[in-house]
Image (cartoon, rainbow, N blue to C red; front, side):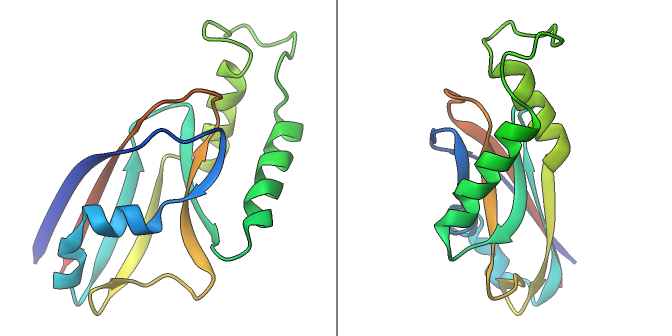
Length: 140
């Protein structure tokens, strides 16, 4: 079995949901060496998250942002943690709801995503900065 791991940074992105599948594939070219395996993508932050969803229609990503802003609004008077501003605690909650990693099968040297699937960076902060990602790929 082969195991590869790469840590890299995604450039700073504005608040919202961003397709990052091509950036992940570029950062981990060893995926091409795996015929059958798995790929784990992990974000090393508590105020951003990862998910897999629609990769074609950008309105889906805008609707994700709308939904999560309604579900976890800023300036909730019950939130105690607001050290970094009104988007601080909502960002942590949104990240907890979506999660810090995704797992994708690898088949014939490619991520085995469905036709309309892509990996999103879910940036929950107004100014989140660069985001560190660890990609681990293993298989035969």
